[in-house]
Image (cartoon, rainbow, N blue to C red; front, side, top):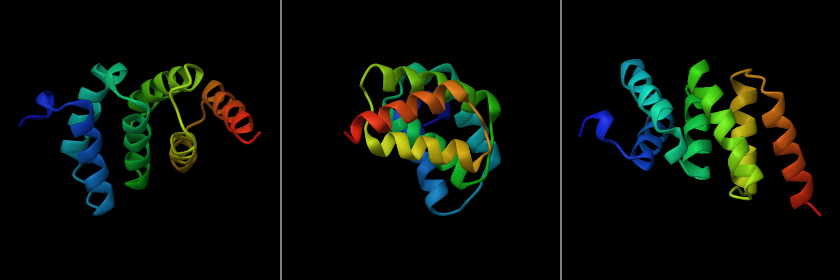
Length: 117
């Protein structure tokens, strides 16, 4: 299959597999990032956080993708469609890539505090 035919899960799984193997194929990863940006609203919480986590694991900062992940991840958290794993993976990925998104961090912080009560 070609990248433009991948589902959101297939994109996330592919990036995760490359990260797990520490194999950085930038052309493929950039292609996945481009496709993911076009369909980011299709991603569920796990797919969002796994994608961010995987790019961070490979030390690939794709600013347009990370910006879109931040917006949609924040929406998922505010809608109650997240869990602690999503919160921690997303926060770690943004920290690892040194991408600052204050609205996302505030939302993650509030959700983490709420879940600890």
